[in-house]
Image 1 (spheres, one colour):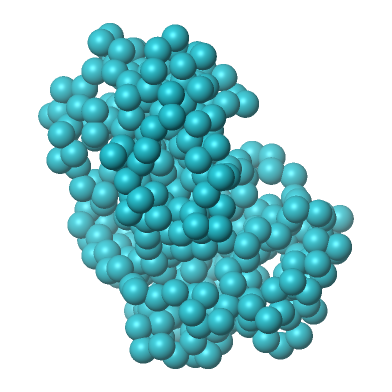
Image 2: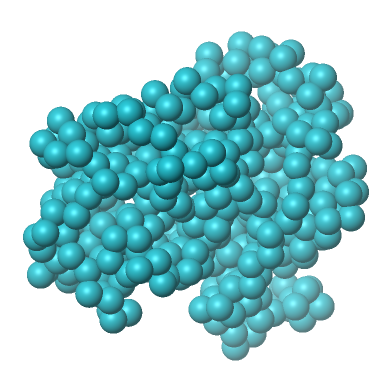
Length: 419
């Protein structure tokens, strides 16, 4: 059945709606049909949760640092309805059905690294917060490609949290609380150590500067900035690397940073200053090894860069912003060392993609490793007048379809409300 949705809601979710209206309305119809075919009834609600792009602060969030991030116009779309049972049933197109009993929300070791763990974790945390939740059915489709570096897992967590919030919590959960619930599910149930940036950017929407000094009450500030109006396009380039399980590589970063913090009697590096750290580098390396010291040095510098990047955007200093993005990229490569997997010689796809971007930009714009790193994506800010040639050059060298031109999305996790 064809339905009309509120235009303001659609434009907040899909900034390119005017140019690509048929595409977006077809997706909505697709998810409704998928729900009807799977559950033999019509969907009552349509939920959407976006992917995210990390703009500043590479691996700073898990040390209670500062980041600059944004929601993008790639999303997971879910058609849903209550099912009057104690089961959550979610069918993800291309992956199949997950069924979770609300009477069994304990952590399960055999579910680690699975979608079921994320659903169970989100439901468990909301129940722990005192809400009485019930079952629902949902059918999802996604153009947030898994392993794309745009955080499909965070978008999925936010989608499930948003659905439960609207269906059973009378929308009482804030966007930040939904993000924290998603992080809990990922850390405790899924088994991946992660900070709160991905979930917050997806749940809140827009360009956001986030300070995680108090991780339970992060300070989130929306920035009114449009990259397109500054004459630049935001590109995310898939390096094409093998996305095998990299949890150990990711987890080693916060673990090593915390080892350095422990030397100073602190839990996280946000509690350590660069002035305290520098005189004790030689002593710290004896305890933790060189890589941990270098990663700590990256954090202490990149945390300040994230703050400076937000200030530059607020002042309209885009040239200064681009310089900070470049510096962050160099620091990630040299000190954080998340551009390729340790010991890998023949496969260094992210490093290769960075080189391609450098050549294609010829001194203009900026580029950096994007997100967690190791085998993911590269971010580039490309002058609009160079965009066509940039995409052509990158896709010739990296692979057809590897360069995604994205727009910033105003909305975070939302329900697409009908007229």
